[in-house]
Amino acid sequence: MKDYKNYYIVSASPEEVYLALTLESTIMLWTGDKAEMVAEPGTEFSMWDGSIIGKNIEFETNKKIVQEWYFGEDEAEIPSIVTIKLHEHKQGTSVELRHVNIPDDAFEDICEGWDYTYFAELIDFYED
Image 1 (spheres, rainbow, N blue to C red):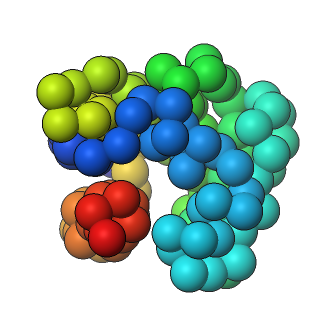
Image 2: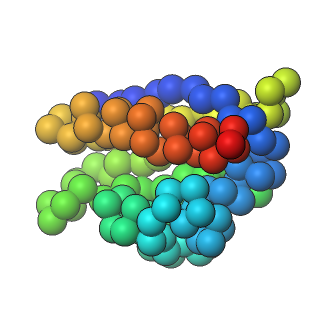
């Protein structure tokens, strides 16, 4: 298992970024794909038409999202946890991402996905 941490700058307010990550209709706008999301702890979510699935753990409005991500049929003994923290920044929002307990065989794909799909598309959504 491996951990990944990175920071991204999104040219939108923390409130807008929070809604983009938690409001189903907005998620579908910036991903261009089907999503299922309810910003309530204990609910399951799905993004990119099922490419990302998991369970919502914690929400702090406009500040923090904590989720457990699932990896295939084999449920890990140690949950893979994603924590996204939003901070005001002079250019909009500084997003602090921490993803822990990523299976070794998925690590490279997950890191590329965060950088070149997930946050790249969110950043592009607000820059257009």
